[in-house]
Length: 364
Image (tube, rainbow, N blue to C red):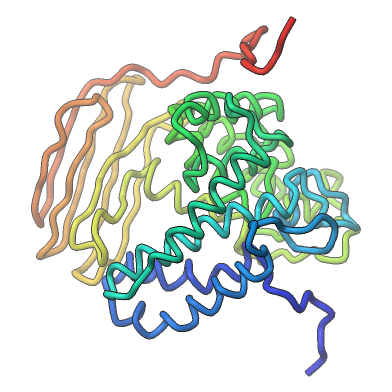
């Protein structure tokens, strides 16, 4: 077996799978024993990760990390040259993994105090080093804003501005996705949770490269490693890595299930579900199914005439779902079986492209 010359130190953001994968599996299956079995390796990872950061949570300049690998702006021969420095990505992921481990410790009756403290130190370091008081990141990029928002690294005052700044960044990027392997799973959720749902839909439905639909327009039936593994003229990207069967950039499918279709777990193992479709401009129907431990859950909705919303929901035995319709009405809880709902909503509108944008950091 050949020895590949990859980094020998903990690989930040990527090695965090040691914590993220068991945590997500627990959320999807409810298997607490899985977390117990993985506890030693999760602790070992966070300890190694923290060791690379040092007591001041200060990742050194220079060095190498995959970071936001294959950022759309990275040149073919330098896929690590992302707009978001790997040190910022590392600090954000250290905060996230440490906080997650502290939460897991509570479930396992372990002492998670030091992990909670480490998570808060890393979050504070991210704010102090990379974010202005008004929520602007030091290196504007979709990944940087999405990390700050989705990993809860901001003060309430900063958060009030950062969602709009992310939406502005997406607008400045021409509604092209402009992230790599680590940022891509977060961008649409960050926009949605910041009240910028229309911008998320604009990103989703973009067809020019780089975008999720560009490969489809080129005849792709799989997810590519690069946004442009095949160039618009039909030639192959000259970079060394040009796989046509890679999962990472397709991570938006999770958002499609939870937000567009509206089918998500509300408790570990899908015993409780959240059904909360969020229609947006450009899509008039969606559906999703998931084989839970209790059986198949399915949701399907249509939007007729831009305002008439209709939802069909099927739940397996021994489950319940909280249903939140997009008209803002009071949520209802339903049990197993088939259910239908209807409401009238405001027609989803595309993003207005303003000629001027208020920048709280700009001064005359």
